[in-house]
Length: 367
Image 1 (tube, rainbow, N blue to C red):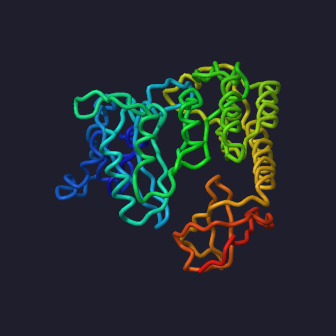
Image 2 (image 1 turned 45 degrees about the vertical axis):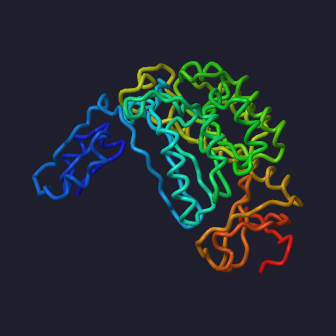
Image 3 (image 1 turned 90 degrees about the horizontal axis):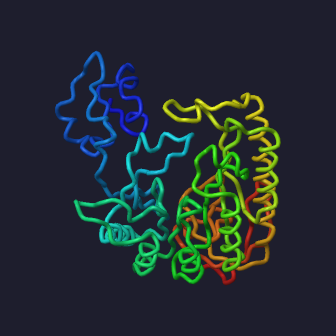
């Protein structure tokens, strides 16, 4: 068995000592796994190859297809940020990006497979254009990447995955608002609504900038969906600091939260900080924010009832229902109909079901 990925990069020897692991490949070697397979033999311990993250200064473009409706296109890897809770720079290396022509070629390949939606992914996607590719300096920004992808024929939807608030510029927001293919859905990490905690985390913005980003999106796309990452229980987060975050999010025009309970990571500065929050309190705060997330999503969905949206239907039959998402990330469902799979249909949202999904009516008879 071969072990690859972030854990293999961070703790290669620990993985090598696991029964059944024959090979551990770090960031520089994982793309060469096929070249190792012919020579692989059973050993009493795992063999470790090239887990020095300083060697991870190259980029390998890729995309994955989870079903017939959506593909995830990686355009960037690594991160130069030094957030005090995060091991990603240790696991993934410096920020580096794919060449624009490669990204466009991958997007064309995806479109030729009949896939309707592409989700742009990366470790720090807004940093696209930083670094070198093939010993050649990049000449394009994230905004230029977005502009170029909007021209790819055959793709109906493009969705930006998580993007740092300080890297989400007005020009990108305004372009998405009038774009042919980019959808009004943003996922923007916050991590804390307290400026005191943001400074301890060494984030590159304060809460005021986050408010500005949300306000700008809602100004040009009132129907936009905005998701938020938040961490609870970070060292130094007193009850007052947590309530600052809670109230900040409660008053913000957002659509849902991804809540993460802080956990210690080796080789991070946060493990040396004072003010460790007991795990029971971390769990309590996490529960409070998950409740707030449910409230925010419900309010967002209620605000969409009566509106006309376009739904991309997915391939799975889940207990007799087919599901899909509107362009602004409202989850809908209807009785299973295989003819709907991987189609875009215009619908009017009618009511929220007991399970939190939304019912709809077709604006025209589905043929």
